[in-house]
Amino acid sequence: MRVKPYTLFVFLLPGFTIVGVLYYMLIWTGVVSTTDWIGMAPVWKFAGFKNYIVLFHSPRFWTNLKNNMIWLVVFVVPTGFIGMILAYMLDGLPRLSKFVRPIFFYPLVIAPVVTATLWAWIFEPQNGVLNNLLSLMHLDFLKAGWIADPKIAIYCMIVAGIWQNFGFALVLYTAAIGEIPRDHIDAAKVDGATSTQIFFHIVIPEISHATIVVFSLLVLYTLKVFDLVWVMTGGGPGYATEVLPYFMYRVTFRQLMVGEGAAIAMIILLMSFVVLVPISKWMMERWAR
Amino acid sequence: MKKAVIYTILIVFAMFYLLPMYVLLATSFKPLSEIGISTMWNPPKHFSLEGFKKAFEKLSKNLKNSFYLTIPATIISSLLGSINGYIFSKIRFKGDNVIFSLILFGMFIPYQSILFPLIRFLQSIHLYGTIPGLILVHVIYGIPITTLIFRNYYMEVPDELIEAGKIDGASFFKVYSKILLPLSIPAFVVVIIWQFTNIWNEFLFAVTVTSNPEKQPITVALVNLAGSQVIEWNIQMAGALITALPTLIVYILLGRYFVRGLLAGSVKG
Image (cartoon, rainbow over all chains, first blue to last red; front, side, top):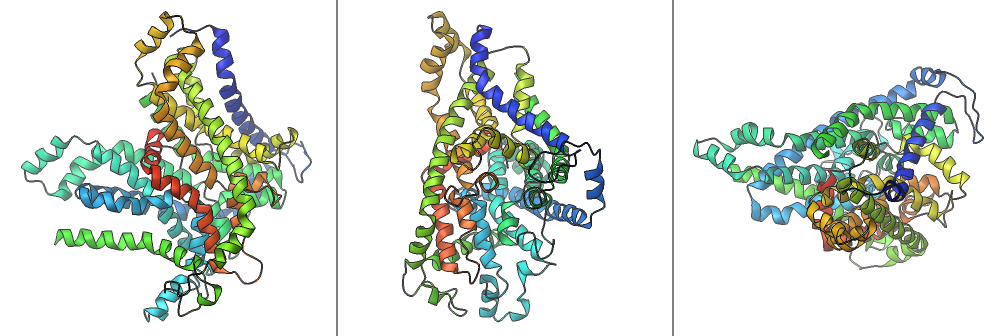
């Protein structure tokens, strides 16, 4: 359909302005990351890559990066794969799944700060819910400091993260498996394939599009995780649970090291490009006219 | 045998999902005196609204703020998304795919990479620290996903319908308001539920943009609910439930539309 350029312009304007603002701010962050800006008042003094170099020499930065990697492995992989397997299991049990699925989905609509508050109590180091349960079951030797123990705190947080986001993987995989043509599966059954064989040879290849989306978005999630850290540990003990998005906030808004904060933000952005660029391209190929 | 394995796995998983909800409910309805070490797992002996009363006293203003924030932000971002979706699905113009991919890309940009300029921007237009400022932020960040959902929905509407409208002399806007808009109700339901849930639950923008406790949405207030001394967990859990209730109710009533929203764009995480 053709329209007059003027009409088009008027209708595109609001959306266009807004997206323009978004990209303008992105570039702005990039520029600020090369300045010496400290404090609330702008300091446009060019400092080259100084902020980045300072970061690369800071142990706190590397702890953060390591924690992000722990999230990447310990959060993304189980959430994605268990979602895939469980979706397949439930696909074979249609009546049961109707009743079971909502149980896994409901945390998706709950605010992350609610999830964090709830799990902060479960993992409370003294008389928290979990330690209490272990006492009741006479398993006192398993009692631990949980989120107060620097060695395991981050894993406790990841448990809360999985609890909240697992339903997302399940929803996407359930839909993808539902779209597999039934005759493909039926034909394999006639040939005597076991359900495990069907899973590996038919289901996994046919749901690869869902796998791309699920894993990409879970990876992006690990680069955004913030609420859980703020509420459950505040990054502590020490910096044991601090991740880059939280680090960026602390550096920018608490220490007012604006230039350095912008550098962290740019590093987060560059890391997200690893999945962001392919998934956007892939979506465009699917959806472009 | 195989069935037994599957059922065992499902039961373990279901426990993992339901026990935290049990804890939340049981604790929030207990008086503080019952949250002892030995009775934690018991259901409340004396059904008490003490926790809710105290939590509500502290949170009621923020609950209202959350509604003042979420409702306008949801409506504005949905309407703009619908208009954008119309343009990107039915009208060809130079560079349309480039602009559309820029919008799509915008959906995934981590909040952190625009957070500080955003604050400066809000300060410069005197909206920093206000609910309208936060509404603007959510409109900006909401446009990509709402555009995407509406665009994919309108792609299914046959072009002939639009052309027929044009031949009848309907203007560009008339085609939208008289033909497309009445067909859009299902898409609006999906988008509105999606936006409502996400904006209601959002924390990072809320905590950065609003520093005055009077102006903060409920997610921020919940985090600040714990006093500096002993944490009264019954109040905490009651507060958490109050915060979660609006989106949970929406989910219980209209959950399938939420799931559709999740699938429609396959969406931001």
